[in-house]
Length: 131
Image (cartoon, rainbow, N blue to C red; front, side, top):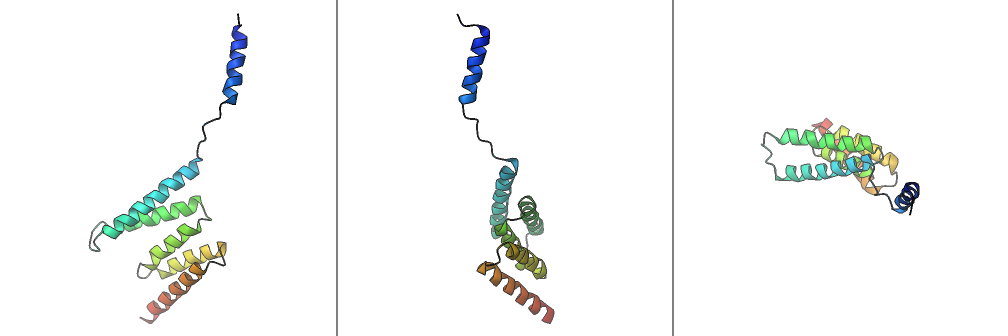
């Protein structure tokens, strides 16, 4: 007859052998949620009429999501590019776009897409100065 102590020891040994369920870090889960939210907001924007009164709110929400992703992951170049492109499409916000592109370029100095986006933002800034 096994004693209570030996049964408990067996259970402990068995429990140690079972692999623990792999949990995602909270930041990774939050990042995935934010990236999905950004995708949904961009899709919503594509379907919105330019005169829709909710357009500005949706744009603000998208900007906040991009900024939160970058806050969580300051090295997220893809989101910095998305944020820059977001501002490049907004009249008068080319300086903010340029700032985002340059921040990303510091992390990936050889990125040709970023170099082109920086030049495009600079050109649009010049155009706006001349207007």
